[in-house]
Image 1 (cartoon, rainbow, N blue to C red):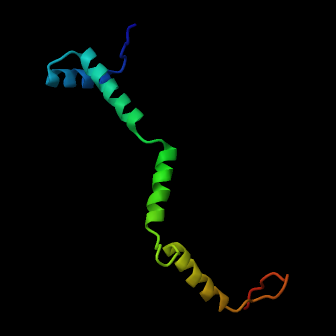
Image 2: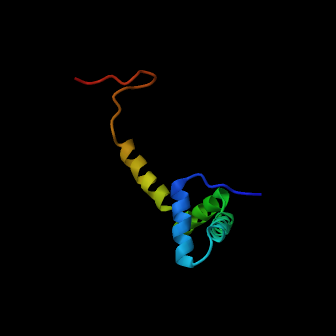
Length: 98
């Protein structure tokens, strides 16, 4: 089956690479397609990337203290928020103080 390239830029690039490699445009396109297929098929899936990210994040936690840096920073933040006085009580909506 034939493949027709109707894009002038693609034809120019294939011709340029063919002349550098001293081969035909067909061979250049074939090699480029094989190379791209190997690259795409060899790339990890999004699931694999997510698993690797979570494992790397877990490895960065502090197992000696049993808490992650994120949890420690949130604990300090909530302690600071507990000392802030509320402008309302109960089910009232906060009212601006002017």
